[in-house]
Image (tube, rainbow, N blue to C red; front, side, top):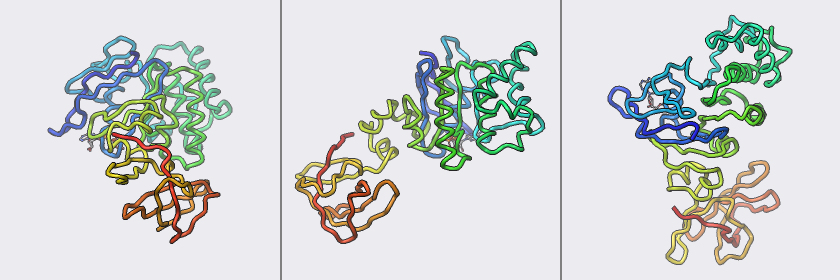
Amino acid sequence: MFLELSGLSRSFDGTKVIRDLTLNVDQGEVVCLLGSSGCGKTTTLRLVGGFLAPDVGSVRVDGVDVTRLSPEVRPTATVFQSYALFPHLTVAGNVAYGLRFVGVARREAEGRVCEMLDAVGLSDQGDAHVDELSGGQQQRVALARALVVGPKVLLLDEPFSNLDANLRLRMREEVHQIQRRFGVTMLFVTHDREEALAFGDRVAIMREGSLSQVGNPQEVYRHPADLYCARFLGHVNELEVGGRRLLFRSEDVLLGREGGLTGRVTDASYLGPIWEYRLDVGGSEVVARAPRQCRYTRGDTVPLAIAETFSV
Ligand SMILES: Nc1ncnc2c1ncn2[C@@H]1O[C@H](COP(=O)(O)OP(=O)(O)OP(=O)(O)O)[C@@H](O)[C@H]1O
């Protein structure tokens, strides 16, 4: 394994925040660390980046134990939520900054800065000051600054959280392209389930300082380890049918299809590409997501079938 987190634990003021966390990441793989606020995602990233030391456990990168190394000498680079750019330096100055500590000759440094600015689409902004840039551009500078040192592992802490929804999607795609181009191994922190599913080769679901499930997006979504993981990734319907408890996703409810069940529509919300319905099915609430063409209104009685269930 390329990045190995083994049995990491860390307490603050006597409270255990990270509990015996183990995670292995392949070379070139993107793993998204997904969890609710306060579950320990940033602390985990700081342990990997060297900004914090674990009480117990180790971090290895490419076979080397880096647990006691400081951030500057670790083969990792971090993109923080706040970008942490230097306002008094130009775009190129910010990108070049990291190279000062790794003893790269001036000419080579200039070449690498140019290459990185090109990779993030900022070739013509090298002389600009960072406070003249938009949020998305600042994000690109932060990414270029992290990549310029040629890290073996790139750590990203909610890098898109300050961007609006459209830019967020665009930056996600751009970072994905850059990741593929450089083949860099990534640990990516987010609390956004869609972002984790779309971005990660694997998703690691974190809860109260440890990992509840690690798997590829389809695995964690379709075969959740437990109800917590299932609910974290989307709405879970629970229905007693013939003495059995069925668990199923809202998009697996087929409205208008004869399946032995009937529901009464209690609410309908238009979400753009789809409608979301709430139905009363024999006294239980069922949430259904259906294409635009599938149109019902409150009070309608609708036959329904369930396409797929899952168990935990
Ligand atoms: N330096 C610190 N001193 C004391 N407590 C800390 C410190 N850093 C983190 N914590 C606590 O550890 C817990 C986990 O924090 P962490 O920032 O890792 O969570 P998170 O999952 O990244 O949350 P968010 O999504 O809100 O950023 C929280 O209860 C936090 O208050």
